[in-house]
Image 1 (cartoon, rainbow, N blue to C red):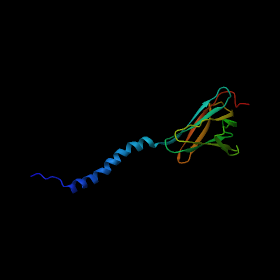
Image 2: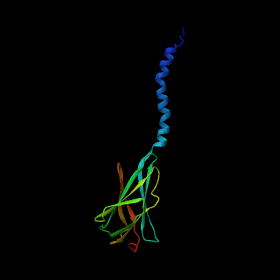
Image 3: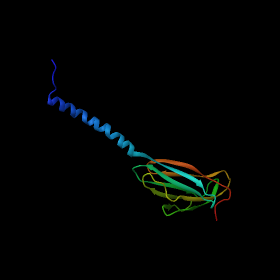
Image 4: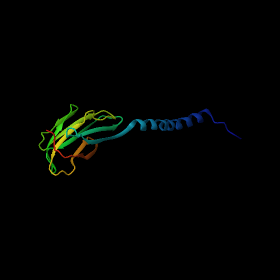
Length: 153
């Protein structure tokens, strides 16, 4: 003898299975739009004017962030640090012992104008170390490439 499921049995089964289908369907859309909560900092040497250029990038697809770069005025290998700061970079600090430059970045964007930094090398060891930070994200340290010739002007 076979039993035909009642309307109540069918509705009860549907009530328990529908949320699982909804969650599975929603997961890929969330994962694709969530992005990575991180930033990167890159550097390049400009041979024409002697400055090294620092560019910050926001990897998040959702959140805006602020990235700060500390420019130490004098280190064991460099002194008389100078900078070229486009208007999108806000400056704080006095240069003694350092300046801090901060840029605000929209989701998945890079600083449209790079921060320039120059210095007088004491040892010619190949670079100037900087640290970039963003609240709630891991700090990054990088070496700005050094080329002979010292700071411009």
